[in-house]
Length: 206
Image (cartoon, rainbow, N blue to C red):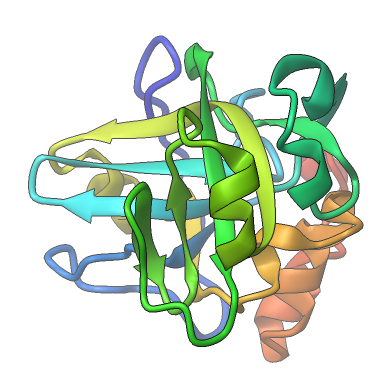
């Protein structure tokens, strides 16, 4: 991950959804930080992968809302937001930029300014007129910054068990209680993976 210096943590895989092959694109998947991942930028985070190619990967952290109102920063977009209507910390890279993740309405095949990630979910160009694109969108969420990996870096971190990888549900990027997403994703996997959600913040106490 890009956060000043690459950071990886070793941990045994638990449960299903892990161990994906390095060449497989993880676009549209969730990266769930293992409890032993102590980098403060990613501790107990859930990252939605927006793009994953041979030269690297990019995603946004889904479960770190701020107190800043999107309407104060990007007037016109607030009516499209799924609660909470605040800006989210998307990651430590490019924190002076904003990324909008949106869910298009059912039946919308696509439009100028919308880049599909999975299903009806994609990113939206924030320079577009929200009054016009909003007619095609069900909801949006706005992030400042993003998580980024260079070529092979994410694959290495997954192999070293810094992350668990799962398929995303369409509702995951738009949860109304995003702080609960990390244990929620783990528990819905069942088995040993569900037990990871109960690990204490300080794993040395477990």
